[in-house]
Image 1: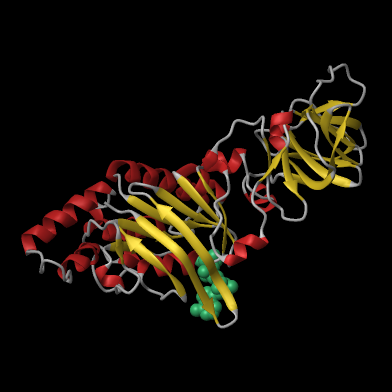
Image 2 (image 1 turned 45 degrees about the vertical axis):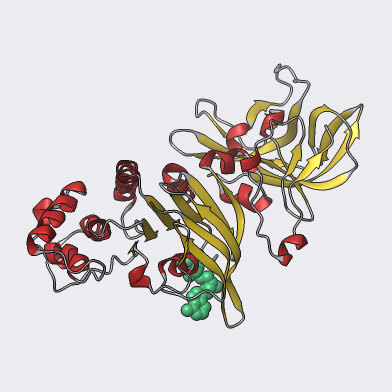
Length: 398
Ligand code: ADP
Ligand code: MG
């Protein structure tokens, strides 16, 4: 078992609120990714879970027991650091055996037990042939495996990992990412994994907790964060190339809810709404590019953006075309076959269900009632008093 409950956890360093009132449940067997830009509080939060740092306020539970005041070594959690933190003077085998030889619960393991367990985990991460080497005789990828193996030997209730792949080159990072995800599936254990890389989060997580400035921005599955970003921040952070975000007005025209901005018009569906200032988000992969005046039939709902081509970037698999629309730059991904010349007049279109609407003042997502309701996609708000300063997800009249 390994179920973690974080209750209104905060940690300040002098006047910096590194972690600000975070409540979160990590279910047994979850691969939870703590995601966010550098400095948003990921490491601070993980160190509090590990017991390496005391919270300023809030509590932590592991399998129903309060562990807030329990020292790190008694928490039954294993941490893998970005730096791997291996003992340089010990062989790989001794590095792996170390956590077992100092185990204080249930006494020391016997020599035979230790070498059996070391061989077993070495096999799991494929380092059996490296057991006699010292860390300096290993490649970065091999060191990373030893660090993971050392966490495995203890059979902890949960694995805590802080950017464990960031010292690897791009190719090895992809391979190791897949290995870690497979290891998680095989063990069925709880993982809490810190990264600033949204691709790692999308590919490995069962659940993502997106952090921004020490606060929880959104919690959900990778699909939920991608399909229904809870805020302008979430829309901008998840996805590459980044979501196009533009200021617009929401209003009703001819009995339909519409979105207007310079050279942008979008018709959602029938209904009424009070006028309000919004931010419209559209992902580059959800836009279709056509030459202005071409015969593509205008759909009755969806968005149309009029502009000119400014720059086309060849990404190999596809191209990223940057267009000037109403004085703003909008990016659209499209197949490489067609060469888009600079200055050509174009129309960019997107389907209504691919339009993300956010309240301009609060930055929070606007939901509309005709959308299938999905409670887990609603942003999780911290319960503290400060939460009232932020508006919850708001309903639009259908
Ligand atoms: P992340 O891991 O997301 O990059 P951190 O948790 O390391 O972020 O840091 C969050 C914030 O707390 C940053 O502003 C950082 O400068 C600050 N911080 C972290 N550790 C300390 C410390 N020991 N003393 C002072 N400030 C710290
Ligand atoms: Mg960090």
